Each structure stands twice: as structure tokens, then as C-alpha cells.
Amino acid sequence: MFIKEIAASLYPWDLADEGIETIADNLVNRSNVNSIYLVGVMHFEKRPLTSLFYTHNSKRKYYLPENSRVYYRLDLNNFKNTRLKPLFSERDFLKDTDWLDVLISEARKRKLKAGVELSHTIFDTNVAYREYPDILQRNINGDIIQAPQGIVCPNHPDVREYQRIMFYDTVKNHDVDFIQTCLLTFASGGSVKAPWFFAEWMDVNRTYLGPLMGIANGGCFCDRCRDKAKELGYDWELIVRDMSKLYRVANATPYRFQEELMENNLTLGSNLTESMLLIEYPGLLQFLKFRIDSVTELFKDIYEGIKEANSSVEFRYNNHVRYPEFEGISFKDIAPYVDSVRDSDYSEQIGAPDKFVYKRNTILKIRRGISFDKNIIAAIAVRPNATPELIKESIKVLSTLGIDGLSLGHYDGSHFEHLDAVAQGMKEANITIVD
Ligand SMILES: [Zn+2]
Image (cartoon, rainbow, N blue to C red; front, side, top):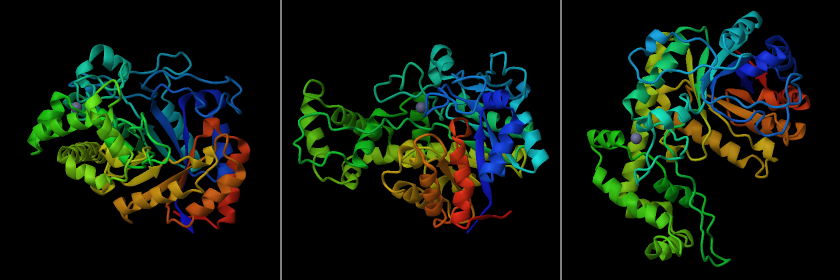
């Protein structure tokens, strides 16, 4: 089969420590990489994420990034009318260098595609929690979700404008071929687990019902969302009524919301379908649709900003959630506003216990949504716990799924035999790169 791209992500500190030339040599020679991108805004997350230590970084054993700092220059004039301003790295070895330009100039030299990723949270949520709590998502009780950091609300005008400008300005001032994001949208609330008194024979690990009920713990119920929902014609009173009721059912224990405990047990412990939950709670369905409308509008704003800055730059959504529609993402709705989707399934690093069923189904779900004129880039984990055999097997499976590219996750924690397995797997699966 033919694909267009093999991408690899890099962090600014990888570039500072290992040097972009060494890294590019490794990726091009070992994995046929023809596309490199900088994670140019990164949240706090210990690196490497899935192993204790770096295996090919001679400068340090691990790294703890600052929260949501920007590692390249921006034109601050573009932010003069917004309350939220980008924050840059304060670390001596990183500040004062435009790491995106460092990556781009190496990519140009080698005729590689060059990109940038704006990761989950592009504004420091610790700063938001302290200084701008009004921009954070609220749960049904009005409390900040995921305190003490929180997650910003895409319906807040200041957040929306800040996000739009971040994408616009990045593209306007850098010669990138694509801009990618795995932006956090609406807090899903997690999956409701069956906490109490289930008989052993009860089928309580319900794939979809638990996460669907969990939305009652998610967001957002802030005033901006209320106003927006009403403006779009949603019945906010119905939404609040049904989500409050579902919240009590979802969180019932023998000691809290006691009167809902049996309902919780009989909902999660029976073979009730998700459809029935949506029939019984029409406000839940409205809430799901309202969030999809909100996120679609956000994508439209971001996409139009990117194209205004440079119409040839590709916008790539990096899917990172199991149930996108539970966080406001509908692939059919965002399809007009993305050029490609990367799916960040990393089954390889957990030993692919399901033989890549989840990976396969997710790729098909995305294809169903974005159709055939947009590209799908499938991730492969080259991190510890994967094996060369698993990586090759994964590539073989992916070669049957009509993908348009591969994307390695992530170079910083990779083992070289895993990078080598990418090129070997491509050869065995008869995958050729075409432009
Ligand atoms: Zn909100």
C-alpha cells in the first residue's frame, strides 16, 4: 500500500539535549521519517512518560516540563486585545531560542515536512485557577472541574479568542506545513464504575454506559455555557434538571444520594442500553449535542484563523480520547474544519492485548466521520513495553486500513530497536511512501 507521511514528534528539550541533526539522522535512517514536528506548547507531564529514564539522552535522565509554556516566538501585538497572554519558558537552557525555527530549518535542509503541535492545555491552568477562575469549566454543582488545575471552557469568549490567536499567530510567523492539536475540549467526567453491592454475575463493566453516565460529572455548566446553549436553542432548564438527576444516580453510594443507590445498581448492573438512558434523560442528549455544537464552532474558528494566516497549512486534529463524542467531538461535524486526523492509539506499549481490535475500530470510526478526502495518520508507540514484533504486527494491521500515514509516539522514550522495526515493518507490509 501507499502512504504519504511518517511523522515524529519532538520536544524542545530533546532538541536542546540531543541536537536536531542527531535526532533527524536517527528518525530518517531508522524509521523512514519524512515529517517532524515540535510539541511547541506542552503541559506539565514527566518525560519520558511511560518509562523511568531516557535511553538516548546523554544530558539528563528525565525531565519535568513547566505547565503550558510556549517554546517559540509569537507576535504579542496579536494578543493585545485579549486578557489571556501566552507564557514562555523560564528555564535558562530553553528560553530565548525559537525551537520551532530550529526544527523547521533542519526539516527544510532535508526536505522533510515540518509541523508544530499545540498540546492539551495551551494556557497554564495553574495560573488560570489562581488568576482567572471564571474561564474554568464548572460541573453541575458550579464547582471547578479537575481542581486545583482545572480545564478551560471553550465557550468562554476570552478562551476562544486566545485559542484562535495562538493557532493563527503560530502559523502566521512560522514556515510550518501543518499544525496539530490534541486540545482538551469538554471534561468527560470519566467512567462511572459500579461501586457497591454488585453480585458477581452482574455485567457491570459496561463499555459505553459507564462513560455515558460519567458525563454527569463532566462539564461545562458555567454561565457562558448556559447563555450559549440558550442562544443555540437548547432547553437549558431540561439539561440542568436531567443532568442533576443523573449526577445523583451516577454518584450514589450507601451513604450519599442513598435514595438513588438502587437506581445506580440496577442501571449499571442490568443490560439496559445507552439508548434507553438517552430516552429517559432527553437533557443528556441535548447536553451532548450542545457540546458538539460548541466544539465544532471552536474548530471552525481555529481552522479559519489558520487558513487566514496561510491557506496552505494543514490543520490536524490529534484524537486522544476513547469516546470523542463524550467530550464534544463529532468527526462528521468537524470534518469540514480539519485536513487530517492523527489517532493516538498506543496499544503497542501495553502489549496489544486485544490484537489491535481497538486500534482498527478507532481508525474506521474516524474514517466514517471524516470520509475519504481527509487524511488519517495512525500512531504507533515506539516506547518501552512495545516490542519490534508488535510494532511490525501493528504496521501490518494498519496497512489493511487505508491509512494515509504513520506517526511515532514518541521519540523521547523510544528504543532504537523499535525505531528500526518501523522501517522493517513497512518493508514487510509492502508500504511505500508517495507524495
Ligand atoms: Zn462553560
